Length: 385
Image (cartoon, rainbow, N blue to C red; front, side):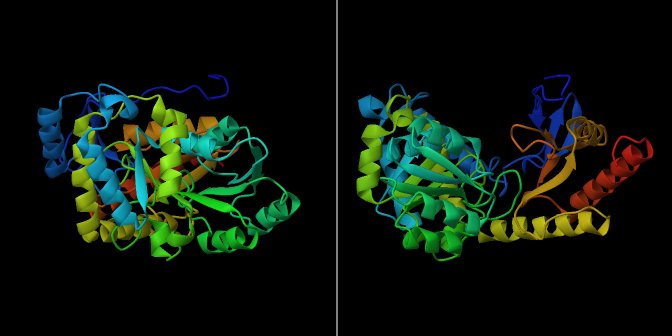
């Protein structure tokens, strides 16, 4: 793996050197953080921190048991009721994290004799959930609705059919064609699950996600989201009809056999949910920063998609080149890591930039200048073409 530049290493963050999370310290050096999923800048909000402290003081430090034993604190009920109301669904269910939510939900709702149709660039947790379900797994080309319809026609005799997609793709920053997916759902009598991990908090009038922004949330059978990105905390949730949620309480193994989240996490999530709903200025700021950074990169000759999401990939191709680029970014004071296979397809290694609401124009202009200088240095040295 080292010879192929695929071995992985930790980047130990020694401190968050400011209260916004835009700067971190690694190996004693301050770095502008352009790798965080803390899109709205809420991870360091003192209202969320204090809410977690208060919950820990009242309920203790640990979850102590699975939710089906005695880990289901009243805080869970409050959070799930508020989530269901926010997402305009009958019920909600909180999981430990996004990976457990996707693997648990898909493996519970699909099984032998069923067919699951999944975008080729879906998150690994979706892929693993399908594998665990033992359903037939059909991957359609990224955002290719003609290919998906071909597969739906070919396998329309499956016992049950599910379409599963990210709404905003985590490594590419582009959006799924959700309006077309809803039409195919109706036309071929399938169920639809949408992972809103990177859209929750960022899209929609109150941050409900891209499905709500497009007005099709009621046509989605299972809405999944996380607290670990725009919310700035930890955990995940699914929202659906009550019968589906009741079923998952019994059948989702990643929920049934896991210890409940610590009360401090639930308390912080409750505070974060309130701020996500009310602080619309954060959504406007992160979108403006995303558009600005993309335009700054394009003005210096980089190829960047015409999108408005905070995930901005700079595809370099070769693993070693991408590692060298990331190393030089750190040397110049920027934290932006190299993303390599199997996280992305072979030959598409990239630097995955992410912007936050708290980034200033001056910081993003300075970062773009450094990216441009590194590109010129590596081209001159013959490292990249």
